[in-house]
Image (cartoon, rainbow, N blue to C red; front, side, top):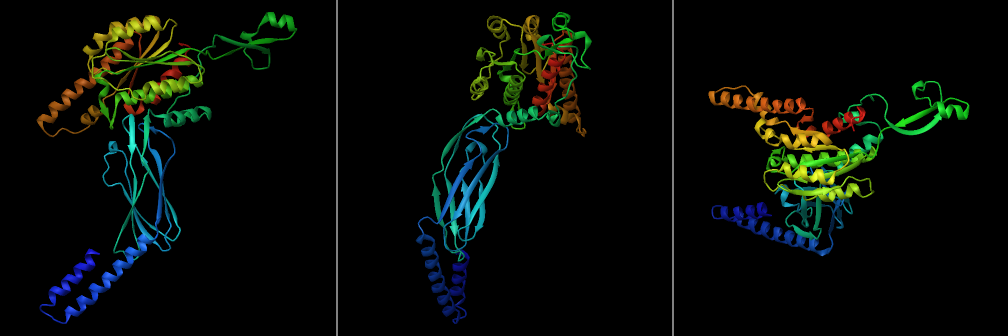
Length: 432
């Protein structure tokens, strides 16, 4: 419209030099006026010219994953249209140009699929869906506003949880790096007595049952079950460190939920403790049907308060609440050896009564800096300091292993896989 009327203005301007252009300008002006009026009439004659609906696959968002959304646009006009659809997504995504342009035929229904990846847990408020419609004339636009406002809570990554669950049932965990480990020895948990068949281990023959039945009977064993597996998440200020837009705390929460779900499938009892300067949340290890839901609710809105973590409080809580020997997976991070030594006495006290696995994070940004070629003196100094910090991280793992404490040193994006591998390794070795 602006281009067309700008052309009319130019005709009137040049009419001062060429008088015959005045008539052309008048004709163009009235022609455009009629077309504009006709365009407005046909756009506003239909009260419900288009329909826009937003649909989600789930009624909540999965943190750190691509969540699918679907916008359905229907053309109720009796002529083809061009529509611009603007979806008001939550301000956490910081996207200002979230607009889709589509051409729709008569009575056409078009689906627009897009993905959003939240990196913060909490509440996400979606606004209205707005459509700007223009006809084939293209001189006017009509705006439609559809009240699709809704709030979707963002939970720790439940999409990965279902992905790992499906792979566990279909025996495809190796696709994501989960190692298959050979069993060491026999499990000590008795299952039942069965008749001997060729190939059974003769060491498991039950002679008393054989005498009663007058045929060879063997003992069958199964994996030990109903063992307590606690995810202990440090919520101190060190866990606020960001990697790829997510904090270490978010990575730990996502990994702990997947681990709890897999341990639940393995017939173990998952539990949870979160702490900083005090105990934030504590969910006792159990195998009730709603246990995973309780864990999700406890971690849904967990945030760090930037306090220094108090391991003495954690030690006292575990001594009081956990009386059975359990597997404790401690999600934390130590950047310096001195930081570890301040808390080492408490970790050693835990290791006396429980199997403790300390999970610390590799600083991938340091590795990126070390792999960059230094071209100046300041860059050489920076790489030297980075090398010192990287070496100190390795010293931390050596110090823990020297004291007989299990340790997982992992990149944040590989945390879930490496944690599951450690859990399965400990199960196969019969340590839990």
